[in-house]
Length: 123
Image 1 (tube, rainbow, N blue to C red):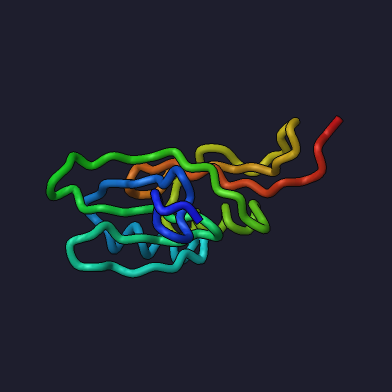
Image 2 (cartoon, helix red, strand yellow):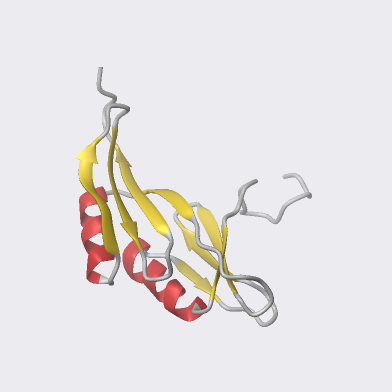
Protein backbone atom coordinates (compact mmCIF):
# COMPACT_ATOMS: atom_id res chain seq x y z
CA UNK A 1 0.00 0.00 0.00
CA UNK A 2 1.32 3.38 -0.95
CA UNK A 3 1.49 5.97 1.81
CA UNK A 4 0.57 8.97 -0.34
CA UNK A 5 -3.20 8.42 0.13
CA UNK A 6 -5.37 7.16 3.00
CA UNK A 7 -6.02 3.44 3.16
CA UNK A 8 -9.26 2.48 1.39
CA UNK A 9 -9.42 5.64 -0.72
CA UNK A 10 -9.24 5.88 -4.52
CA UNK A 11 -6.77 8.15 -6.28
CA UNK A 12 -9.54 10.56 -7.31
CA UNK A 13 -12.16 11.49 -4.71
CA UNK A 14 -15.11 13.77 -5.55
CA UNK A 15 -15.88 16.59 -3.13
CA UNK A 16 -19.14 18.52 -3.08
CA UNK A 17 -19.61 21.86 -1.28
CA UNK A 18 -23.15 22.55 -0.09
CA UNK A 19 -25.16 24.59 2.37
CA UNK A 20 -26.89 21.39 3.56
CA UNK A 21 -24.33 18.68 4.32
CA UNK A 22 -26.71 16.55 6.39
CA UNK A 23 -29.49 16.78 3.81
CA UNK A 24 -27.24 15.67 0.97
CA UNK A 25 -25.80 12.88 3.14
CA UNK A 26 -29.35 11.70 3.86
CA UNK A 27 -30.11 11.63 0.12
CA UNK A 28 -26.99 9.52 -0.52
CA UNK A 29 -27.95 7.10 2.26
CA UNK A 30 -31.53 6.71 0.97
CA UNK A 31 -30.68 6.39 -2.73
CA UNK A 32 -27.28 4.68 -2.86
CA UNK A 33 -27.07 3.01 0.55
CA UNK A 34 -24.13 5.27 1.42
CA UNK A 35 -22.50 5.03 4.82
CA UNK A 36 -20.43 7.61 6.63
CA UNK A 37 -20.35 10.09 9.43
CA UNK A 38 -19.44 13.65 10.21
CA UNK A 39 -16.13 14.31 11.93
CA UNK A 40 -15.52 17.66 13.63
CA UNK A 41 -13.52 20.03 11.47
CA UNK A 42 -13.44 17.69 8.47
CA UNK A 43 -15.54 17.01 5.40
CA UNK A 44 -18.17 14.30 5.76
CA UNK A 45 -16.89 11.11 4.13
CA UNK A 46 -19.68 9.11 2.50
CA UNK A 47 -18.85 5.66 1.14
CA UNK A 48 -20.86 4.48 -1.87
CA UNK A 49 -19.76 0.97 -2.81
CA UNK A 50 -15.97 1.06 -3.02
CA UNK A 51 -15.73 4.85 -3.38
CA UNK A 52 -15.81 7.89 -1.11
CA UNK A 53 -17.58 11.17 -1.80
CA UNK A 54 -16.60 14.03 0.48
CA UNK A 55 -19.29 16.56 1.40
CA UNK A 56 -18.25 19.90 2.82
CA UNK A 57 -20.07 22.93 4.12
CA UNK A 58 -20.00 26.03 1.97
CA UNK A 59 -18.99 28.10 5.04
CA UNK A 60 -15.46 28.65 3.72
CA UNK A 61 -15.91 27.95 0.02
CA UNK A 62 -18.56 28.64 -2.56
CA UNK A 63 -21.14 25.88 -3.00
CA UNK A 64 -20.19 23.69 -5.95
CA UNK A 65 -22.17 20.85 -7.43
CA UNK A 66 -20.90 17.83 -9.33
CA UNK A 67 -21.74 15.33 -12.07
CA UNK A 68 -21.02 11.81 -10.85
CA UNK A 69 -21.32 8.45 -12.62
CA UNK A 70 -22.35 5.75 -10.15
CA UNK A 71 -22.56 2.02 -10.87
CA UNK A 72 -25.36 0.25 -8.98
CA UNK A 73 -26.93 -3.22 -9.08
CA UNK A 74 -30.21 -1.98 -10.59
CA UNK A 75 -30.24 1.38 -12.37
CA UNK A 76 -34.03 1.42 -12.75
CA UNK A 77 -34.66 0.77 -9.07
CA UNK A 78 -32.07 3.33 -7.95
CA UNK A 79 -33.52 5.91 -10.37
CA UNK A 80 -36.95 5.40 -8.78
CA UNK A 81 -35.44 5.76 -5.29
CA UNK A 82 -33.82 9.04 -6.31
CA UNK A 83 -37.11 10.40 -7.65
CA UNK A 84 -38.86 9.34 -4.43
CA UNK A 85 -36.24 11.35 -2.52
CA UNK A 86 -37.06 14.51 -4.48
CA UNK A 87 -34.56 14.30 -7.35
CA UNK A 88 -35.69 15.44 -10.80
CA UNK A 89 -35.27 13.27 -13.86
CA UNK A 90 -32.62 14.37 -16.35
CA UNK A 91 -32.90 11.21 -18.46
CA UNK A 92 -35.08 8.17 -17.96
CA UNK A 93 -33.42 4.72 -17.87
CA UNK A 94 -32.25 3.49 -21.26
CA UNK A 95 -29.74 1.04 -22.73
CA UNK A 96 -26.57 2.67 -24.05
CA UNK A 97 -24.70 1.31 -27.05
CA UNK A 98 -21.64 0.67 -24.86
CA UNK A 99 -23.42 -1.74 -22.53
CA UNK A 100 -24.68 0.33 -19.61
CA UNK A 101 -28.30 0.71 -18.57
CA UNK A 102 -28.27 4.36 -17.49
CA UNK A 103 -30.47 7.10 -16.08
CA UNK A 104 -29.70 10.57 -14.75
CA UNK A 105 -31.20 12.67 -12.00
CA UNK A 106 -30.53 16.11 -10.51
CA UNK A 107 -30.75 16.22 -6.72
CA UNK A 108 -32.09 19.17 -4.71
CA UNK A 109 -28.52 20.49 -4.30
CA UNK A 110 -27.87 20.71 -8.04
CA UNK A 111 -25.73 17.59 -8.41
CA UNK A 112 -26.34 15.32 -11.39
CA UNK A 113 -26.10 11.59 -10.70
CA UNK A 114 -25.71 9.33 -13.72
CA UNK A 115 -26.92 5.98 -12.42
CA UNK A 116 -25.71 2.94 -14.35
CA UNK A 117 -25.69 -0.84 -14.38
CA UNK A 118 -23.29 -2.66 -16.71
CA UNK A 119 -25.01 -5.07 -19.06
CA UNK A 120 -23.58 -7.17 -21.83
CA UNK A 121 -21.83 -5.00 -24.42
CA UNK A 122 -23.93 -4.48 -27.50
CA UNK A 123 -22.38 -5.35 -30.76
